[in-house]
Length: 532
Image 1 (cartoon, rainbow, N blue to C red):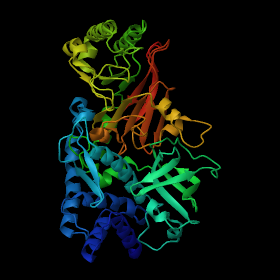
Image 2 (image 1 turned 120 degrees about the vertical axis):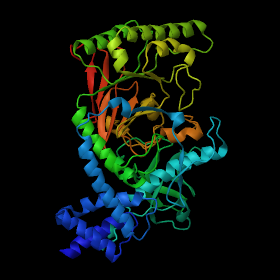
Image 3 (image 1 turned 45 degrees about the horizontal axis):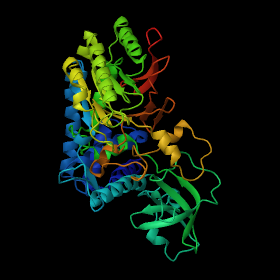
Image 4 (image 1 turned 90 degrees about the vertical axis):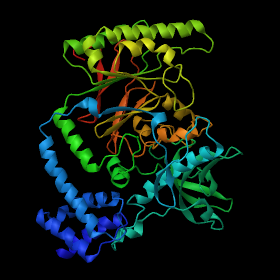
């Protein structure tokens, strides 16, 4: 029995590239005995200690008993202090942060150190040739390191028959001179100068031949997305594809267990233990708290203000005020053509009318946070992603009449307690369908979920500010992603990340989405239905 427990302990720490000496191993066994942990629960219990040890600044490859003792003591102290804090109700406002894309710190992936390193120099909207190359390299390397950590690619430290079925990634440079062999590659789908579809990685590219691919894989494959491709290399220097798939996704908990010490949002890093405690308090103290998300709030549409007024009336009648109301553009059905002063004035008048409408509900104005996210047709300082907020000249009355209004970038992020919620307003589905590669006869909502970047397209299709490409990453996986799109409304949960499209607000029913942090789920609500 002791050997079984020891092997389980060693297995967990080897997963994080650490080795255990006799003293450290004995200490961990004593902890398991003290807390009466059964053999079946050993791996689960040791996993937390290994994760926390890995985050320590002085953590060594060979586990230090002193550091291990400190990690365990911190866990005990946290449990004691948590009991004292449990009677205090959680204040949602003190745990709510709206994060603009241009305020997020930039972290590059270091291949040498196998971790993230913070960018040293200042970021600019112009970028450079080097920054554009580095942005794409970061996209590839960040996804690749999660692939290599997946159980199908990472060998166990213990002898097992499963080792025979492990997958080995190869590079394009390893194809040379090996015609007739089968390879598994990872890279970006792109077109060559001759217009032929290729797979491109950090070492080169190879032309792809899809003629032998019988069944398309799950998900949508576009030029610019990253994919795993298996095929046979030929004398013609092409790879005959027999299978293609999206890289496996790494859960938020798994990513945070390794990189939890890195402050990706710029609001301070928290430990997994702190996240777990906050999540429990949200479920207990704030079970009914909601975030409303509306998209395509066309202020020039004659019925939009009627729908908003009905939504606010229902909030008052039912004594239910959401903590956050996200209003996504476009705020004009036609946009504002360049140089059209009449349309510019009309948009400004509509936004001032919106300010007056919100201010006419004092209870909502005092309680709710309003977040305005510009759409692709709205007037901002730039048209390239990420987009700046609505121009300040249009929103002066909103700023003066609504104290808790936030004019956010597109995309932006909401940090609420332990959760990270991404808000993105773009007609992404239409662009994706226009740039599909390979065969995909039937497109389903689930096909939208398998991306680790908000814009899985090349910069020639969708330009992106190179120095701020990190603001479009979905790593670590957020808690929720709002993909506000003109496409049909949908919702799904994938690897613990809830993805949903609230649909267009404009219409006879005025539907929108209500996200519940305590359950990490969204549901469709309707203004014209009494009590929503």
